Image (cartoon, rainbow, N blue to C red; front, side, top):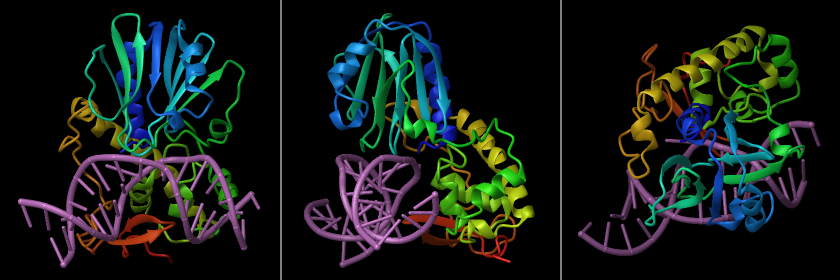
Length: 273
DNA sequence: CCTAATCCCTGTAAGC
DNA sequence: TGCTTACAGGGATTAG
């Protein structure tokens, strides 16, 4: 679920409820999800701090505090919401952060692949430092892209999943972007032509901003802690559409496994050339 | 530096 | 219907 558009939506939804609030308590139910040290230590650091702002970097949600930043990564199944503090919990709630206005911030994450990290001011994180371009705000030139792809022999789709290139692209949108750009996902990244690179540079923000716009229309359902069902209207061009006709040319979409992940593409629109 | 494989965990859908 | 299996949108780690 959570690639850049979904993470951006979560960020926007929780931001107004967090800004200016003071943290009164924090409970991390699954120890291994906290990657920056001991849970008790993180909780101690958080209590009393005021939230300055909430931002997104790649697929990470950054809660900026007076003395540091609390980072959430939603993994495969995570989502976050704010609600009035309550005793009874929905299932799969892994983090509760009590706020000074009676509300609480919740991380719900059935599969527990999400991660939480606290960085004191000045502290660096390798995983954050490694992140690449922001798809919606960086202006990338063909030369910059070609340079980054120069010694990558993997198929371009697998390379798009590398967060050090563009940060925030995941498995779904990687396929969608390459369909939009008419580039074969299996083509070795270093063999891409200038034209193909240009088309990818255009497709990345176009696909992600469109997804964001559409995802935004189903925020309420998307955010609901209990009901993901049927909320997220799919309008993918290729993802999960194997054996169905390409909306551009009618050819059957095919699915292949690439780097242990599903890849979908139109064999006619996205020729290797 | 790069690549491929494995693992973390649980819910859901498909298959028998 | 009920049990079993395959698979899922992320990414860190390990071995080569």
